[in-house]
Image 1 (cartoon, rainbow, N blue to C red):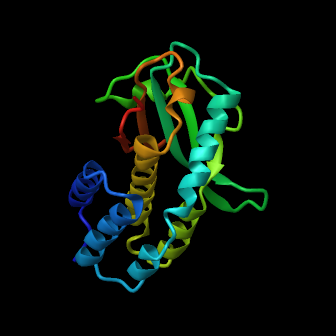
Image 2: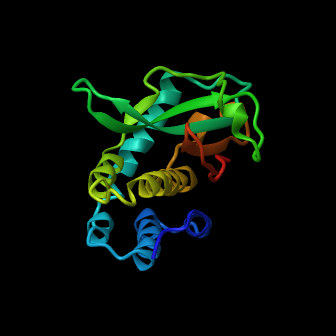
Image 3: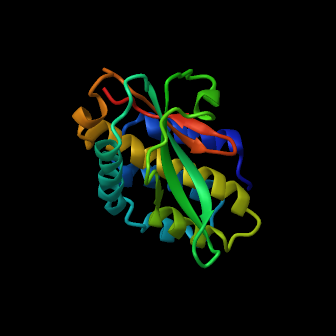
Length: 196
């Protein structure tokens, strides 16, 4: 068996729309892929403490907005997924936050030229880097897994944070609603729950 992009994407959307807690949602994504292509690393990915990093991400997001309040024209937030080089020239996964004064759900071009670029907008995510280190051993499937699992982890964990954990008053000082989208700078993205 091989992975199919469209089936994996469909599974991610189903799991995301189910609004499960991060551990259950993550396991739903991993279970689907394990059934498609059995490998010995799936239990390692299921054992990751995906709940622990949520508090760090929440604190980071709230600190950014406290230190750099959103301008009144910002209507959407982009949480990009990137790989950066650390001080030792090692590639590390990170996310970053920007905002835009325009938004179209069906076209992510609004995120290309942000109008809100706060200081300290980058955050290295250890879980993403742990995922990366596990899947790198599967050279045949690495490119596919690198795409879907990083997007799955970010969308599922950030969506739960947005829905249940954020201090909304920090984000909604002017707007009644902020659209939130996460994705790879180089391609695919997914609409998350709005901050309302």
